[in-house]
Length: 144
Length: 471
Image (cartoon, rainbow over all chains, first blue to last red):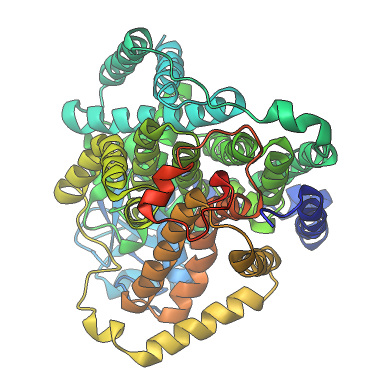
């Protein structure tokens, strides 16, 4: 025997391909229904930060504070990924500004909170005041 | 103007680089697209760090690429003879339905890709947190582009990752003066389509047209392939470059054209300039070329030299980048010997691996089928040098990857679950190539450098009566 016959291989690939394509079709058409595509699409990070981006400097360092902990060291994960996700999506939307986690000495400082009612407490904890709110108080500029 | 020059730079650099490989048709077109994007991006990074972010720098860079590519095309000594195709001997006996099935699957895959892109326009987590983030830094940063590598960015941004993919996307952002999510999506689609076309064309060249369509169909219908492509991450591009390297190695070994190892090394170096794992794969392919007995030792060393020569330019760029710009990695930032020798971590990893293999969620059925076919065929089929080189490289890469899982500082199972599918999809196209090279016998009429005396002198086969092409 020097090789597997093409027809034998073709039957196996046909079976696997049918299963594979069916799996994809299930995922795209049933699990995440295509006909509800525009209702269920994720809001882009850019939308949340568009307004604040317009008033931030074009580049440079900006301090970042939040009511959710951010996993900032390799190997040390916080209990959930909310804080890390919020920081990363803000960084993605606001590049080339560098958001510096926990630094409250820059002017201004960006606050990015999960719960808007915690915004004032977050600002006070860093000796800052809320200067301007965006997105219903989820995003804000803080100053001394 | 700049868009026209950029398009010419990609096209001519692509044609020049692909002309070093003795291939034609779809094989050459797919290879040219990969090489063209890679050279365009590497040239951008060299120009950016050497001369800054001024648009005139990019224009001069593209003009130089056009000139250099034209020079290579005009001055090359002779067009390498394309390897003899097997089409004439096989067409009549070849199944036609796999080609039709491939066409239908390609249409469906494109629809799935578009649907996923509309639903997740910024791609998967790693796409926006690493790759497109870096592209935005480069495109928006102007003279301050080095902020992309600020040590104050959290480690999640992986500023140590190489720049091939962000380099392509950032230049496209600048050319189109738009950061539409369809720009990185189109780049991602190009890499995925190139991978499928390349696999089909390479297998067609090496084993005949029926096998080519089957191999392409196998890759395209692997459930998570389209998902990873539409996630806009670097794993499919790395996989495409590694596949290009493996295909050219197989061609070099089976077609009496060892000079093809030069573009193979270049393709592997493009993988290294795409993602850190690419450097590992390059090293494993070099090791595979050296330790597998596909020729006498002196020829293997010569082959390795050609491979390394092809990889050298981009390896120099990578070394400079790692030494001067991005030398910190979250995976190797702390002492690790204790972790490597911890049997508990190895046990945890192997349990996770076994669960991954049998757990039919994304594409384990394909993986199980591949492993089963490999196990069944390994003892019953003749040993074929090209398949062995690629297979040894993949096995070595997986072994080192497992060691990295044990060494790295993150919680082991969390890190494993977050990354193993991406590691597998990087190697999957090349694994499919190796599998077909093992399973399918070479069609009659193919030329082989491994015929007869060369392989016997190397002691590569204990069964000299076997067909020379099937060693």
